[in-house]
Length: 303
Image (cartoon, rainbow, N blue to C red; front, side, top):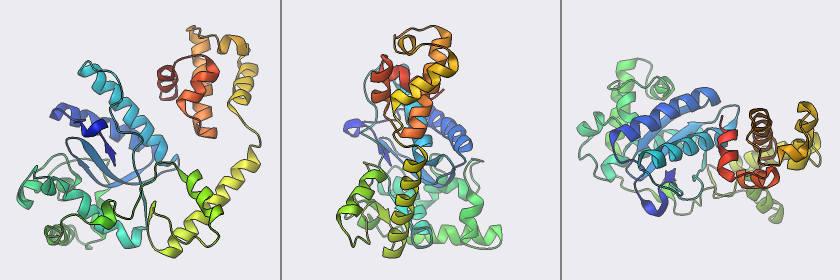
């Protein structure tokens, strides 16, 4: 979930919503993510994704950076559009997939953007109508969702809609929206750090799932982090700058001089991409090392 800063609107008209979805389609295809549910509200967005090979952070960073630039250009504004980093929880599919799909798709009714299920069926800015076949969004994995409800298309759609209808009286569900869940804002490094401090940790409030699921997830994540450290010991932004300087024949001094020459800008873009993908470095840290603005690095990394 991502929200506008100070809860301000991030969509002012339908063109904004359409632009957001067009860019989302491109990013989902590029990152090989699957999307099972989504809703665009006035000041926030809900997405239920299954991350692809590049992970969730890649698609979200590209999506939100591009949209913020589009929005600021269109409305001649400056500054941040979104409130901090997007918030996320990881979901145990078997237990929570259907409940989350229903909860996300009922958001427009809870917010009184539409009043009835019949109106929600025709609401274009949610995945609900797409699952029912009322809208075409080929980038949404409706087949996977409908297979959870039945073996034939007609029965599956009917069972899905009945399931949504049954949720109309539920209201807000703390377990799915917050309550005891503090969605991840610090990334998995903080999860691992917490796990090291608490020897018998078999839960985590960034995860929506049972104890065994959380335990297995944390173990797998820590193992991957250890493998990364073995594969790239002591790697830093400076190391990557030095490597790309050697490859390109452009001195480190020139790379960090702020020059806008095309060949130098190209190598800086390579450095920015490598630093974000290999080190998880922030745009601000990369910018400081390369002697350019954070916005310049953001543009380079997203090309």
